[in-house]
Length: 310
Image 1 (spheres, one colour):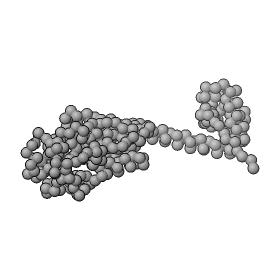
Image 2: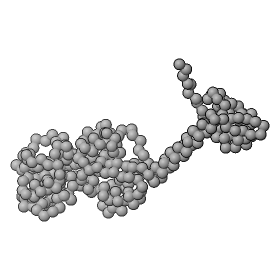
Image 3: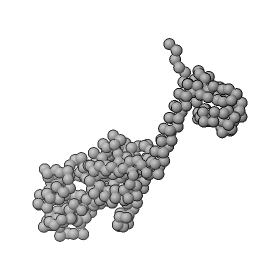
Image 4: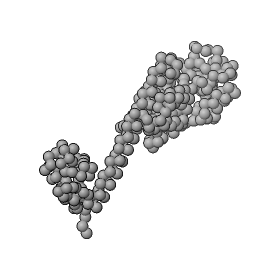
């Protein structure tokens, strides 16, 4: 069985073929390609030798395409159109006129930062789709690992398999019922020793808050509640009902602003939450993803300076 050898044509070969198809004149086609007529004729003969068929009929008066040449001309035209369409799509992506960005974020970060970011993004880049997943730490890293998101906005944990950027480090606060003995301490805050004999309600083990407290490897003087929840709103309700105390990072405090609760700074520097932006290691970012990352950094800088969102 005979096998076909691959034909290796350069862009200049296709340019020469297309020029002769359009002009049907060797001299004018050679001029268009900035070649001498003899060099141009040799190029066309090499193309015909490569395909094993004559592509043009030559006469003293005209140049016409053979049936094989007609077929090749149609394919070259199709390739040119597809290339132009591809270049147009790339220009749209580069100009942020198309594309997509997907982000996974912890619920507290999604609630505090992302609404303003999404609104600003849609105003600046309405044709670039932005998808947001709010999920606990494990869910965020799973989405990133599977390639379903470009970024994960998360807090600490074992992120060695990803490239990470530290955005900020936030302190923890103690939340207790408004009538609790510790509530009167206010800005004076509390420490580990103040929790002796108290019952602490924790978030689920898949949460970044729970994981961070456990990584401190403390010998607690408090009791760990049998109540374990995934949602901060539920946690606020349990504390308000007098069922225990809880420790939460600063960005979650809006959940605990209602009546019946007191919040006070927790003065243990070892307990702080690093908020990081993670992405797949070595993965190049699209133009849209780079633009979203820059917008996030602007938002974080404003947060540090206490400025309102733009």
